Length: 110
Image (cartoon, rainbow, N blue to C red):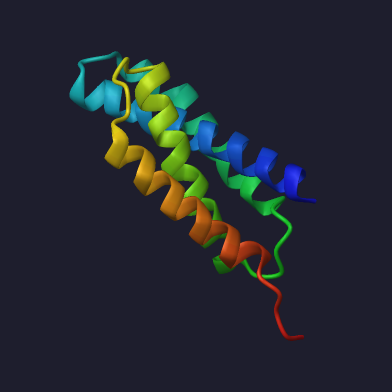
């Protein structure tokens, strides 16, 4: 279950970041408005993927996903934008991933 959850969150993060980057490229970098079409499709895929997260509550799934999003954004920073994350970026990512793990997998009273 842990690896499936991480795979869902990683795919959702990629889809969200790609969709948001399409808007960023159009508004901030002068890319064609046609970038918005795949961007919107990517954001729809992101929303669908989050519905697959194994959580009884949407808010808990979204909160846990937030940590994965932060880490994935730093991967995007490095892989797509060519800027290597620094030690503070990596430290912050480890903190939010630890928080995400606690939110999603902590034992809960039923």
